[in-house]
Length: 334
Image (cartoon, rainbow, N blue to C red; front, side):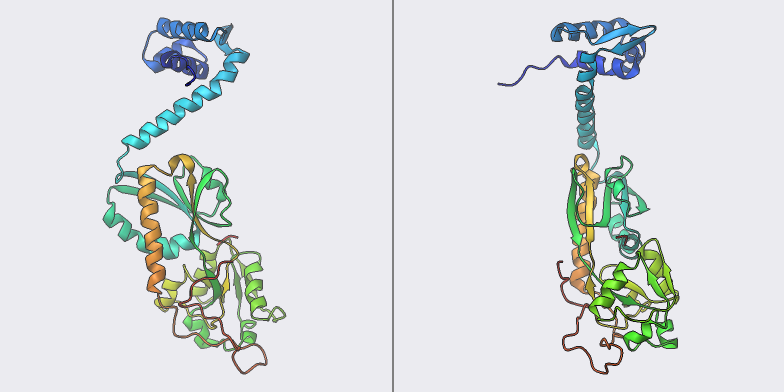
Protein backbone atom coordinates (compact mmCIF):
# COMPACT_ATOMS: atom_id res chain seq x y z
CA UNK A 1 0.00 0.00 0.00
CA UNK A 2 1.37 3.42 -0.99
CA UNK A 3 2.48 5.62 1.90
CA UNK A 4 0.45 8.77 2.39
CA UNK A 5 2.37 11.95 1.57
CA UNK A 6 1.79 15.46 2.94
CA UNK A 7 -0.06 17.84 0.56
CA UNK A 8 2.13 19.36 -2.16
CA UNK A 9 1.37 23.08 -1.70
CA UNK A 10 2.28 23.13 2.02
CA UNK A 11 5.51 21.30 1.21
CA UNK A 12 6.34 23.92 -1.42
CA UNK A 13 5.65 26.73 1.07
CA UNK A 14 7.80 24.98 3.68
CA UNK A 15 10.76 24.55 1.28
CA UNK A 16 10.66 28.16 0.09
CA UNK A 17 10.37 29.54 3.62
CA UNK A 18 13.21 27.37 4.91
CA UNK A 19 15.45 28.42 2.04
CA UNK A 20 14.57 32.12 2.29
CA UNK A 21 14.37 32.25 6.08
CA UNK A 22 11.37 34.56 5.76
CA UNK A 23 7.63 34.21 5.19
CA UNK A 24 7.58 37.46 3.23
CA UNK A 25 10.39 36.43 0.86
CA UNK A 26 8.82 33.00 0.38
CA UNK A 27 5.48 34.66 -0.45
CA UNK A 28 7.19 36.88 -3.05
CA UNK A 29 8.90 33.87 -4.63
CA UNK A 30 5.69 31.85 -4.79
CA UNK A 31 3.64 34.88 -5.88
CA UNK A 32 1.12 34.48 -3.05
CA UNK A 33 0.34 36.48 0.10
CA UNK A 34 2.23 36.35 3.38
CA UNK A 35 -0.91 34.96 5.01
CA UNK A 36 -1.23 32.17 2.43
CA UNK A 37 2.32 30.93 3.12
CA UNK A 38 1.73 31.10 6.88
CA UNK A 39 -1.53 29.14 6.47
CA UNK A 40 0.19 26.45 4.35
CA UNK A 41 2.95 25.95 6.92
CA UNK A 42 0.46 25.66 9.78
CA UNK A 43 -1.47 23.10 7.72
CA UNK A 44 1.74 21.08 7.17
CA UNK A 45 2.63 21.24 10.86
CA UNK A 46 -0.87 20.04 11.72
CA UNK A 47 -0.61 17.17 9.22
CA UNK A 48 2.75 16.11 10.66
CA UNK A 49 1.80 16.92 14.25
CA UNK A 50 5.10 18.74 14.85
CA UNK A 51 6.56 22.24 14.73
CA UNK A 52 8.82 22.94 11.76
CA UNK A 53 9.91 26.52 12.52
CA UNK A 54 10.70 28.69 15.51
CA UNK A 55 11.14 32.46 15.41
CA UNK A 56 14.52 33.95 16.36
CA UNK A 57 14.35 37.72 16.24
CA UNK A 58 13.11 38.74 12.80
CA UNK A 59 13.98 35.41 11.17
CA UNK A 60 12.56 31.93 11.18
CA UNK A 61 14.75 29.00 12.12
CA UNK A 62 14.10 25.34 11.45
CA UNK A 63 13.42 23.08 14.38
CA UNK A 64 15.22 19.75 14.53
CA UNK A 65 12.22 18.12 12.83
CA UNK A 66 12.15 20.79 10.12
CA UNK A 67 15.89 20.38 9.48
CA UNK A 68 15.37 16.65 9.05
CA UNK A 69 12.52 17.13 6.56
CA UNK A 70 14.09 19.88 4.42
CA UNK A 71 16.77 17.89 2.46
CA UNK A 72 14.25 15.32 1.26
CA UNK A 73 11.72 17.96 0.24
CA UNK A 74 14.32 20.12 -1.52
CA UNK A 75 15.74 17.11 -3.39
CA UNK A 76 12.27 16.05 -4.50
CA UNK A 77 11.45 19.49 -5.92
CA UNK A 78 14.81 19.69 -7.66
CA UNK A 79 14.18 16.30 -9.26
CA UNK A 80 10.74 17.37 -10.45
CA UNK A 81 12.17 20.58 -11.91
CA UNK A 82 14.97 18.72 -13.69
CA UNK A 83 12.59 16.14 -15.16
CA UNK A 84 10.22 18.85 -16.33
CA UNK A 85 13.07 20.74 -17.98
CA UNK A 86 14.19 17.60 -19.81
CA UNK A 87 10.67 16.90 -21.03
CA UNK A 88 10.17 20.40 -22.39
CA UNK A 89 13.68 20.85 -23.85
CA UNK A 90 13.71 20.25 -27.62
CA UNK A 91 15.85 17.30 -28.69
CA UNK A 92 17.55 19.20 -31.48
CA UNK A 93 17.97 22.67 -29.99
CA UNK A 94 19.73 24.28 -27.05
CA UNK A 95 23.22 24.49 -25.59
CA UNK A 96 25.39 21.48 -24.80
CA UNK A 97 28.53 21.77 -22.67
CA UNK A 98 31.17 19.15 -23.50
CA UNK A 99 34.50 18.56 -21.75
CA UNK A 100 36.91 16.39 -23.71
CA UNK A 101 40.48 15.10 -23.47
CA UNK A 102 42.62 17.81 -25.16
CA UNK A 103 44.26 15.54 -27.76
CA UNK A 104 41.00 13.83 -28.65
CA UNK A 105 39.22 17.18 -28.95
CA UNK A 106 41.86 18.84 -31.13
CA UNK A 107 42.80 15.98 -33.42
CA UNK A 108 39.60 13.92 -33.59
CA UNK A 109 36.47 15.74 -32.38
CA UNK A 110 37.01 19.22 -33.84
CA UNK A 111 37.68 17.94 -37.38
CA UNK A 112 34.30 16.17 -37.24
CA UNK A 113 32.19 19.03 -35.88
CA UNK A 114 30.89 19.81 -39.35
CA UNK A 115 29.08 16.48 -39.38
CA UNK A 116 27.37 17.24 -36.06
CA UNK A 117 26.46 20.81 -37.02
CA UNK A 118 24.99 19.70 -40.33
CA UNK A 119 22.65 17.30 -38.54
CA UNK A 120 21.84 19.50 -35.53
CA UNK A 121 22.27 23.17 -36.56
CA UNK A 122 20.25 24.45 -33.59
CA UNK A 123 22.48 22.89 -30.93
CA UNK A 124 25.16 25.24 -29.66
CA UNK A 125 28.23 23.43 -28.39
CA UNK A 126 30.36 24.80 -25.57
CA UNK A 127 33.63 22.86 -25.69
CA UNK A 128 36.33 22.69 -23.03
CA UNK A 129 39.60 20.82 -23.51
CA UNK A 130 40.24 19.03 -20.22
CA UNK A 131 40.77 15.62 -18.71
CA UNK A 132 39.80 16.79 -15.22
CA UNK A 133 37.75 13.88 -13.85
CA UNK A 134 35.90 16.22 -11.48
CA UNK A 135 34.09 17.62 -14.51
CA UNK A 136 32.03 14.44 -14.68
CA UNK A 137 30.06 15.82 -11.73
CA UNK A 138 30.30 19.52 -12.50
CA UNK A 139 26.93 21.33 -12.82
CA UNK A 140 28.48 23.38 -15.65
CA UNK A 141 29.25 20.35 -17.86
CA UNK A 142 26.64 18.16 -19.55
CA UNK A 143 28.82 15.35 -20.91
CA UNK A 144 32.52 14.43 -20.75
CA UNK A 145 34.85 12.38 -22.91
CA UNK A 146 37.66 11.41 -20.53
CA UNK A 147 40.79 9.28 -20.48
CA UNK A 148 40.78 6.95 -17.51
CA UNK A 149 39.99 3.53 -16.10
CA UNK A 150 36.20 3.84 -16.40
CA UNK A 151 35.65 4.17 -12.66
CA UNK A 152 33.29 7.11 -12.13
CA UNK A 153 30.92 6.01 -9.33
CA UNK A 154 27.37 7.36 -9.50
CA UNK A 155 27.85 8.45 -13.15
CA UNK A 156 26.69 6.97 -16.43
CA UNK A 157 29.83 5.66 -18.15
CA UNK A 158 30.43 3.94 -21.47
CA UNK A 159 33.66 2.88 -23.18
CA UNK A 160 34.27 4.92 -26.35
CA UNK A 161 37.62 3.55 -27.56
CA UNK A 162 40.71 1.68 -26.51
CA UNK A 163 43.91 2.54 -28.36
CA UNK A 164 47.61 1.87 -28.76
CA UNK A 165 50.69 4.10 -28.51
CA UNK A 166 53.65 4.38 -30.90
CA UNK A 167 56.43 6.90 -31.67
CA UNK A 168 55.66 9.75 -34.10
CA UNK A 169 57.80 12.52 -35.57
CA UNK A 170 57.59 15.10 -38.33
CA UNK A 171 58.81 13.96 -41.77
CA UNK A 172 61.17 16.94 -41.88
CA UNK A 173 62.83 15.86 -38.63
CA UNK A 174 63.21 12.27 -39.82
CA UNK A 175 64.59 13.38 -43.19
CA UNK A 176 67.18 15.63 -41.55
CA UNK A 177 68.17 13.15 -38.87
CA UNK A 178 66.94 9.64 -39.80
CA UNK A 179 65.50 7.21 -37.25
CA UNK A 180 66.41 3.75 -38.49
CA UNK A 181 67.05 1.89 -35.22
CA UNK A 182 66.08 2.32 -31.61
CA UNK A 183 69.53 3.78 -30.93
CA UNK A 184 68.64 6.70 -33.20
CA UNK A 185 65.84 7.80 -30.84
CA UNK A 186 68.50 8.70 -28.31
CA UNK A 187 69.81 11.42 -30.62
CA UNK A 188 66.40 13.14 -30.68
CA UNK A 189 64.44 15.05 -28.06
CA UNK A 190 61.97 12.74 -26.34
CA UNK A 191 58.56 14.41 -25.85
CA UNK A 192 56.46 13.22 -22.90
CA UNK A 193 52.73 13.67 -22.20
CA UNK A 194 53.12 12.29 -18.66
CA UNK A 195 55.87 11.59 -16.13
CA UNK A 196 57.63 9.19 -18.48
CA UNK A 197 55.66 6.00 -17.86
CA UNK A 198 54.21 5.78 -21.38
CA UNK A 199 57.61 5.98 -23.05
CA UNK A 200 58.98 3.46 -20.53
CA UNK A 201 56.15 1.07 -21.44
CA UNK A 202 56.92 1.38 -25.14
CA UNK A 203 60.69 0.99 -24.63
CA UNK A 204 60.12 -2.03 -22.38
CA UNK A 205 58.05 -3.65 -25.14
CA UNK A 206 60.91 -2.91 -27.54
CA UNK A 207 63.38 -4.42 -25.04
CA UNK A 208 65.20 -1.08 -24.90
CA UNK A 209 64.78 0.31 -21.39
CA UNK A 210 68.56 0.77 -21.24
CA UNK A 211 68.50 3.04 -24.28
CA UNK A 212 70.69 6.11 -23.87
CA UNK A 213 68.35 9.10 -23.88
CA UNK A 214 69.01 12.61 -25.02
CA UNK A 215 67.10 15.78 -24.09
CA UNK A 216 63.54 15.35 -22.82
CA UNK A 217 60.55 17.67 -22.55
CA UNK A 218 57.38 17.07 -20.50
CA UNK A 219 53.96 18.49 -21.38
CA UNK A 220 50.68 18.67 -19.49
CA UNK A 221 48.84 16.56 -22.06
CA UNK A 222 49.30 14.56 -25.27
CA UNK A 223 47.97 17.32 -27.52
CA UNK A 224 50.92 19.57 -26.67
CA UNK A 225 53.45 16.77 -27.00
CA UNK A 226 52.10 15.77 -30.42
CA UNK A 227 51.94 19.39 -31.57
CA UNK A 228 55.60 19.74 -30.59
CA UNK A 229 56.34 16.68 -32.70
CA UNK A 230 54.45 18.18 -35.66
CA UNK A 231 56.67 21.26 -35.40
CA UNK A 232 59.78 19.09 -35.51
CA UNK A 233 60.84 19.51 -31.89
CA UNK A 234 61.28 15.82 -31.14
CA UNK A 235 59.68 12.38 -31.03
CA UNK A 236 56.36 11.90 -29.18
CA UNK A 237 54.00 9.00 -28.60
CA UNK A 238 50.92 9.20 -30.80
CA UNK A 239 47.93 6.91 -30.59
CA UNK A 240 45.73 5.00 -33.00
CA UNK A 241 42.75 7.34 -32.47
CA UNK A 242 44.08 10.89 -32.34
CA UNK A 243 47.21 10.61 -34.55
CA UNK A 244 45.60 8.86 -37.52
CA UNK A 245 44.55 12.09 -39.24
CA UNK A 246 47.99 13.67 -38.80
CA UNK A 247 49.63 10.57 -40.25
CA UNK A 248 47.19 10.44 -43.15
CA UNK A 249 47.92 14.08 -44.03
CA UNK A 250 51.65 13.52 -43.84
CA UNK A 251 52.15 15.87 -40.89
CA UNK A 252 53.63 12.99 -38.91
CA UNK A 253 55.33 9.72 -39.68
CA UNK A 254 55.96 6.78 -37.39
CA UNK A 255 59.41 5.23 -37.73
CA UNK A 256 58.57 1.79 -36.29
CA UNK A 257 55.72 -0.68 -36.44
CA UNK A 258 55.63 -1.47 -32.71
CA UNK A 259 52.56 -0.25 -30.79
CA UNK A 260 51.62 -0.93 -27.17
CA UNK A 261 48.19 -0.74 -25.52
CA UNK A 262 47.55 2.43 -23.51
CA UNK A 263 47.06 1.92 -19.78
CA UNK A 264 43.53 3.36 -19.90
CA UNK A 265 40.92 4.25 -22.52
CA UNK A 266 38.52 6.96 -23.66
CA UNK A 267 35.11 6.95 -21.92
CA UNK A 268 31.94 8.99 -22.27
CA UNK A 269 30.77 10.08 -18.82
CA UNK A 270 27.85 12.15 -17.55
CA UNK A 271 25.72 12.53 -14.45
CA UNK A 272 22.93 10.00 -14.21
CA UNK A 273 20.24 12.69 -14.19
CA UNK A 274 21.50 14.03 -17.54
CA UNK A 275 21.82 10.76 -19.47
CA UNK A 276 18.32 11.03 -20.94
CA UNK A 277 18.41 14.79 -21.50
CA UNK A 278 17.56 15.19 -25.21
CA UNK A 279 20.65 17.17 -26.25
CA UNK A 280 22.94 14.79 -24.34
CA UNK A 281 21.28 11.79 -25.96
CA UNK A 282 21.63 13.38 -29.41
CA UNK A 283 25.36 14.04 -28.90
CA UNK A 284 26.11 10.59 -27.48
CA UNK A 285 24.11 8.87 -30.22
CA UNK A 286 26.16 10.81 -32.81
CA UNK A 287 29.52 10.28 -31.08
CA UNK A 288 29.65 6.48 -30.96
CA UNK A 289 28.80 5.80 -34.64
CA UNK A 290 31.29 8.51 -35.63
CA UNK A 291 34.03 6.76 -33.67
CA UNK A 292 33.06 3.39 -35.11
CA UNK A 293 33.09 4.78 -38.64
CA UNK A 294 36.52 6.37 -38.26
CA UNK A 295 37.95 3.13 -36.91
CA UNK A 296 36.29 0.94 -39.53
CA UNK A 297 37.65 3.16 -42.31
CA UNK A 298 41.11 2.27 -41.07
CA UNK A 299 42.48 5.73 -41.81
CA UNK A 300 45.99 5.21 -43.25
CA UNK A 301 48.75 5.33 -40.69
CA UNK A 302 51.51 6.21 -43.19
CA UNK A 303 53.62 4.22 -45.57
CA UNK A 304 56.87 5.36 -43.98
CA UNK A 305 56.84 2.78 -41.19
CA UNK A 306 59.97 0.73 -40.69
CA UNK A 307 60.44 -2.65 -39.13
CA UNK A 308 61.70 -2.21 -35.58
CA UNK A 309 65.45 -2.64 -35.29
CA UNK A 310 67.00 -2.89 -31.88
CA UNK A 311 70.51 -1.55 -31.25
CA UNK A 312 73.05 -3.91 -32.76
CA UNK A 313 70.39 -6.05 -34.47
CA UNK A 314 70.17 -5.85 -38.26
CA UNK A 315 67.10 -8.01 -38.73
CA UNK A 316 63.47 -7.38 -37.82
CA UNK A 317 61.84 -9.09 -34.84
CA UNK A 318 60.27 -12.43 -35.66
CA UNK A 319 56.72 -11.17 -35.03
CA UNK A 320 56.55 -7.42 -35.59
CA UNK A 321 53.54 -5.74 -34.06
CA UNK A 322 51.48 -3.93 -36.67
CA UNK A 323 49.10 -1.21 -35.56
CA UNK A 324 47.67 0.24 -38.78
CA UNK A 325 44.74 -2.08 -39.27
CA UNK A 326 44.57 -4.48 -36.33
CA UNK A 327 42.04 -4.42 -33.54
CA UNK A 328 43.39 -2.90 -30.29
CA UNK A 329 44.34 -5.34 -27.55
CA UNK A 330 42.11 -5.11 -24.47
CA UNK A 331 44.22 -4.90 -21.68
CA UNK A 332 47.02 9.37 -17.33
CA UNK A 333 46.71 12.38 -18.90
CA UNK A 334 46.22 11.96 -22.66
